[in-house]
Image (cartoon, rainbow, N blue to C red):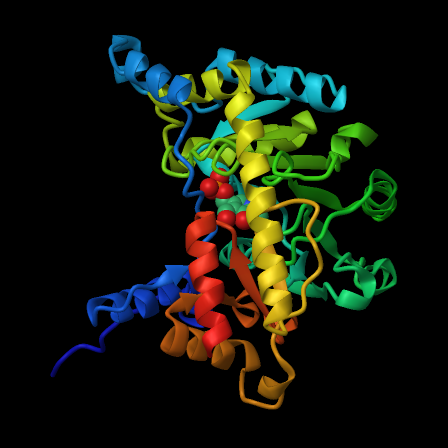
Length: 390
Ligand SMILES: Cc1ncc(COP(=O)(O)O)c(C=O)c1O
């Protein structure tokens, strides 16, 4: 008699929704295979080239035999000092590179490791949101309480809603400048959230991945401006320096929390490759002209796409940061099973233009669609012309 087949995915894995971006990629790949010239505003992966000084740094680093051995778990001291220097220049925050900063394989890795480090209880997770907050909490066995980010509240958390769920909450995720809504907050608004977390003994996990992609004079705050106690800030070089393929970021803040994440990391991977960290040191310490130039390019693309979408009847706020536009799905789609998915499918089928359906970021993202500004102005004009035609 055959044995029962016990080879199957874990409960968490089988319950997770399919990873949105692989589905979107597959949709676009299917169309391209049929010969369609797809203009993708789907994944938020910078199209602008990694600055040359960073490429030179990784090439040089590849010749250093010290980089051929296992790296340290926490990252090179020089990388952590570069992060610390960045916080001093940018927010006037002093971070001890020895205990308050650690390198990570992109922000994504540390999001998981931070969740794994936390005691059981509730995780407060925004919706819509970067989906990894939800999945990491589920993999870590936390009871996820999703709090809605609604337009009427400027896509900020409603603290009275959170207050009613603060019992047993262990940590809370927020991310401003925000993916996917492109919302931003003021230092004062952030201060209220920090205060709420401290009052309730909840760790604040703050994803500041987009802090350097801001426009029109707006400078995003850091929660570490309110002290480090109970706060971890997550950061990434992927967007600011077009380094998504390098996989480099960091975690910083409360030294006890940093140490907990590091303890998890020691059990999971063997640190960020030395050559990648050397490139990161150059990114943070080297000339910043390209990063500045890129912000200007994204701002021009934002204005172009926003105006064109507006003319086509797609309403969106002008974002002060991120490279996303969060547009409302036209009224005629409301009432369909998934308005955002139907709209995205229609746009792809009829115009060969790909965007991300808001529902992919959670149910409160339904009714919206996200455009990533990762196409040249020429391609944006072409996409707008096709949209106009349909
Ligand atoms: C809010 C947010 N956090 C983290 C990441 C991932 O960053 P990294 O490439 O450093 O893993 C992304 C990528 O899209 C993101 O949007």
